[in-house]
Amino acid sequence: MRCPVCGSYDQSVLSMKSKQFAEGLVECSGCGSSWAINHGHAEMVVDAHPQSFLTGQTECVEADDYVWAA
Image (tube, rainbow, N blue to C red; front, side, top):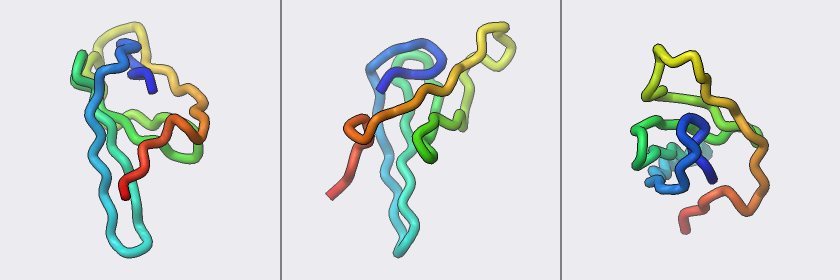
């Protein structure tokens, strides 16, 4: 999945699980932005460029874009 801010494909994924709760947090290695995938849309958690007039856009993701931890 591409970074919604800079468009980079370099990223690291943190998977969090607790009983019925499971969430994946993605951090871009290029710009440092963080986002989570929620119902097929990217929700920004940390925007590396908050003062920029260019805003991060959410993009629809397909099922194969998700990273599943075993």
